[in-house]
Image (tube, rainbow, N blue to C red):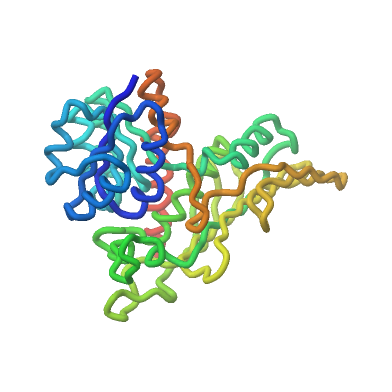
Length: 335
């Protein structure tokens, strides 16, 4: 089975992740690109052997396109994804699912109405270390989980975005909405929910724009850092930090503290360490996590295509994405 896919938005996330992973999937025939800048769409079409269209309507009304990646900026997800679903397309939507729970719930309603797959790109679930950690936690290899800490930080989106500019939409309140919390934090919130089979219920934290400035040299409108304390429905306690100001090595680490030991994920170059109370240490030789400087396959595209081809439910549902977005809203509402 081979079919065409479409991509909305032709920024760095498309060029470095979605497009190459679609190109390498055996079920994908051609990739059709749409961007508000036709030049940007044509550039990627040339690079990946697809074609570009001038309007979103061309993409949505093309019967050869079975699935669409929504790689537009945050404020457009609820518009583009909803339209794509109601046009009969399966959709892989970049995270966060939307800029508000209200909009996300409208997207979930479009999913139900259309009968199509809506999958959200919380790709950290697919790394080998996170998959192995979940297996160990479910087997209670170290007993019950008690507490956790997680972090995700790098030097900022102005160094990642396609324009390499402080004018990036990530810094704009009306487009990004939640800054680093919705960009990096949402990954770790979803990861904790998934690893622990639990949900964060209470959030206490601080956030602010500590260092980043926009193209005019003014402090940005959204947080570039956040630090918070978390409590889950099952009573686990944890801490989390998200940052666009880690001016050095990227940090994407998580630690799970259990009754009988500790799981250390992506610490100091080691994908996964299991430390038992009796002093035993097990080191799992797995691949390193994908970073901005280490672009490897996320596995998200293959999982999305597999759902379509084999008529499976999305492994990352809209309801799970909404649960993570609710945590973001709780954190942002703290005075």
